[in-house]
Amino acid sequence: MSPARWALLALALIGVSLLAIAVGTIAVPISAIWDALRGTGDTQLTYVVRALRLPRVVLASLVGVGLGMSGAALQGTMRNPLAEPYLLGVSGGAAVGAVLAQAAGVAGALLPLAAFVGAIVAVLAAFVVAHAAGARGDPRVLLMAGVVVGAFANAAIMVVLANAEPNTVRNALWWMMGSVSEAAWPQIVVLLGYLLVGGGALVALGREIDVLALGEEAAAGLGLEVDAAVRRVFLVASLLAAATVAAAGLVGFVGLVVPHIARAFGIRKHRPLLLASALVGATLVVSADLLGRILRPPAELPLGAVTALVGVPFFLAKLRRLT
Amino acid sequence: MSVLFFIALFVGALLLGACQHSEPRAVAALRDDFGAPVTVTAAPRRIVSLNPTTTEVLFAIGAGPRVVGRSMYDAFPESALAVPSLGAALRPNVEAIIGAKPDLVLLYASQDNRPAAERLRQAGIATAALRIDSIAQFERDTRLIGRLTGDAARADAVVDSVRATLDRVRAATSSLPRPTVFFHTWDRPLITIGGGSFLSQLVDIAGGRNVYGDLPGPSGIVTVEDVVRRNPDYILASPITAANVRADPRWQAVPAVRAGHVLVFDTTIVGRPSVTLGAAARSLADLLHPGAVR
Picture 1: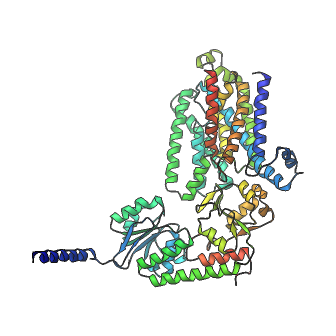
Picture 2: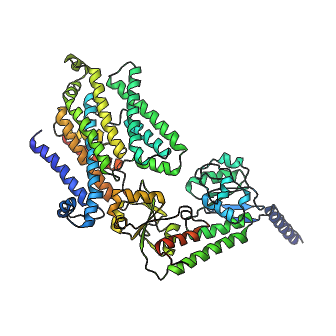
Picture 3: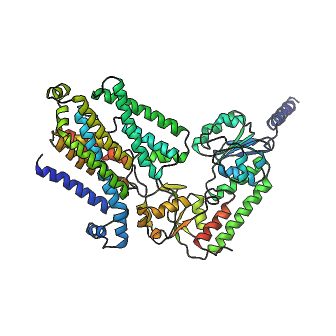
């Protein structure tokens, strides 16, 4: 991909982020943003930018980075355009963790941890199921195992929610729809840590993903230990997705559609594809959060739904250009 | 002759029909908030009430000893806790209700409760679905409950006493400046009260103005940013949410929070449109206008 196109992707993210800081129920003039960030401008605008808008925009972009990279890695490894980060039971497991935490009344600070643990347990369960099926690193078996674990998680959620208080049901649904409205710096720092480690690991695995994308036999022929490589990518990609879920709930569609948009720029190798997916993912989630905030004030639309509303037309446009 | 005979026959048939209709005689025949007829043939002796408000009303009008089942949420008055809980108040367990052998069931008039109300009626149990969301609905339905249970006089007395307290609070605050209030009811998502809620009415009577009084329903989902824009003078919150608001950096964007204007209301009095409405208005007035109500 040409440097000009990289610059275009980066500019799109910067532009959307500035817009997201400026636009809302309270308008912040673009010229006032810098003063507000430094704390030298109007007090009220400073609070709006620093306490409300900036954390949201940063968290939204980090969530997009994590889901976008995770999706790009999984689609390459599985050679399946429908692969996405929630596949291996991440979303279901995280939801079970979150719902149990809410039903037990320990939500609040413990909720992200519960969601994260739930996601990791579900992914490990999928690996165990695949192992029991005798195919440790076969992507198709792993996919089946993920679907089975996800279905089990859904059943568990229904059992818990069927007898839960209305308040618990409301909290659980709100969480499952995804939101960055409660963005706070400590949680952003934690997610950033996971992204640096997990994203870095995926980029390091980029060459292996390139080889895996050729097909198992070709990869084995090139001397790659296919099973081990597949499991490495799956584990890291799921960890990334689990970290985003812990921070913002379930934000659908991003991991599925972002790699396709990135590929539409003509990228084939996975290292640049992972980086482009990170930029596109961040841009998509920040724009979705902005739209969710301004479409129906004073309420907010759920982030997970708006990502799909924003992503589908974008996806279709790119698809048309490809065909 | 034959004409007279037929008229006599006709009148006789009418009388007979009327007699059959009024046998057994109804003590009270009313319509509930679903528009369904509620007929009790004698003062009910076993009452199931699945709504904190109606349960509290029953105890206040002296029908408490006849309550044989409540919902898990009905915690007022304290003596109500001795009544067995039958579980949920919405989509209740119909079998558990029938198992309590009630001759009157009171439900909250939510769409969720339509199927249960229908099945209880089919089981021959007098069932009233009551939607008590506002002060007027509390007054009307308390009187209705009184007529159903045969405690009409005490129900009227309860309504009059609540109304007297509300009038006293309203009079004490009517000439004072009216601060704007954000009423915080839920965190995730952020939910406040709209103009359709008794709480909005109480804020009004207590000498304040709900910044979200323009929301038509009893409640609505809003955002911290929009609260910033509406810039209330005070935040009203329960002890737990007040602590969250004070600790959450996002809320620092609201000037009232920075100024320390977070008022904590008493959740045992404020929160249900029931016999404590008067006390609730008074406690809110004490927060907004300390010393104004004597």
